[in-house]
Image (cartoon, rainbow, N blue to C red; front, side, top):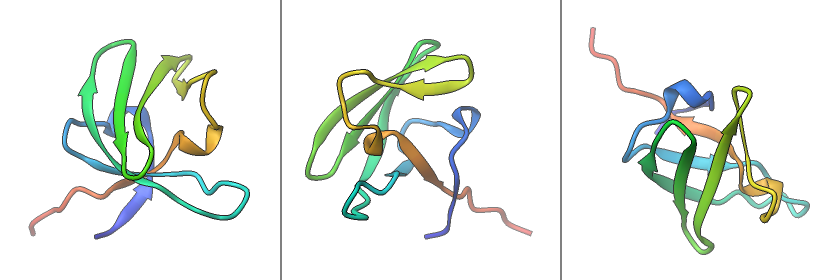
Length: 80
């Protein structure tokens, strides 16, 4: 699987995402399962559900470690 830098406009239900590394350089993988104009919800493996609020083109959640914000998203396959 190829990963690219996450941008909110790339979000889609079912897409795999990866968090930013935490202080131990651990990255969690998850799947986007809900999107609306205000939030993106991710189910992170080994952590659970994380709700990220859209704010000024960015995502944030004041109640979780920022390392669970989305850092990377799976690249969309293109056929030539």
